[in-house]
Length: 560
Ligand code: DGJ
Image (tube, rainbow, N blue to C red; front, top):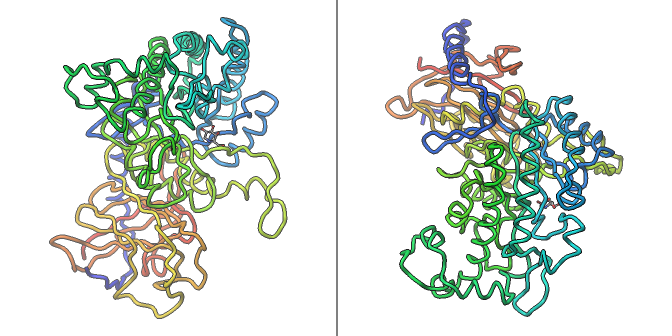
């Protein structure tokens, strides 16, 4: 690898670059002129959410559970403004929506939609119904007061568990009816597609027991496994065996998953038949690296080991999504990998939106995410900074806002580039305790933490803050470095990042060849078009591309 960088000053050579960017913009427009319902498209194992005929990247945030009330909404909107989101995820409560059997109250949904439009936001509505975090707490009172008709499940020891039974036909029918009324109303009321996706239930499944052990459920458990479940598990459909005989140690877990997924699949299918916008289910996920055994994790939801069962039982559900609260970098990245699949677009509907966690937004984009949304981002309590003074909302939400400020004006471009397979990202894995701040300046052996590989060029990335070639004396305390690089054409890139430095170098047959920047533009997108604020050169490029502050660059490199 040639690391010697002797930079000559270049004449301004923008036209070539501008032409190629222009042709990209034209391509984007040409591909996206068919307005229709929000929907998902798939190409070569990649996915895009199409909204109003164009690729749409959800820069989202979810409000707190009890914030979807007109009295609270003003605070939600002001928090969303501070965050620079383009989409709010907000619940619809079954208990509020159907106060009496068959009587539906649409006024809160309508208020949310109307006010979201006024704030220039899209919505993802969360159907808090049979399951909310594994419990039935959002069922209407008239259901809660009839536990025989709408039962909870029974644990192995006969204890009542605070979790609705997936085997209750009456509950299923009530949910289907209510969800259908909700989707029918959306179809009528939301002609301009403010609502772009709907989450069906919330973190479904059970805590504290692997499955329902009631006599009724036991009877089903002792019966032959349905042919569809066998085929989802790649087991010969002839076998007339029960769950234990087929699945042995996994039997209880797979039984619960199959029935929860089948139930939700039916609710989703009923809603989709009325109004076919994308539907997803979110899971309280198990640790992907050290999962342990249930009931150490919630059972029934879309965990990584039961994708096949979920996809087969709930085909009306478009996306199985992870809620990621895992506080370990390797595990977090593993979740992103596991949920971005040929048959499953990656969408992160809940995660942590503070501190170094926010760099995982970039990691998600590297796995082709169609959207990302930290949870509980309308918290109106007073928070105090380290100096004991109250934090302003701007300070409190800055970690997420610094991502979204950068990405919101170019969200459509990023979605398209991702769909075209042009984006790669890297995030800092850890703060290097041995990193030597300050001099000596070393151009020959600059530090590389990670490399991204493009056609004929590598991008070598070092995380942290830098002055020229050296690390700055003070480094961020948490590993919050992040970079996204989109290859626009060979040797032409769009970069967005924070707390890192990027060095390009030629690879393959040109490894070691002298090279140069043709142009480095720093700027921002406005209404989808890149506007350069300045051309970087001299000290701002001679030592690599330094993202001490969040920035968007367009860079063109060439061999001298
Ligand atoms: C995950 C759930 O899906 C959310 O609704 C919320 O309860 C958070 N956990 C925790 O606050």
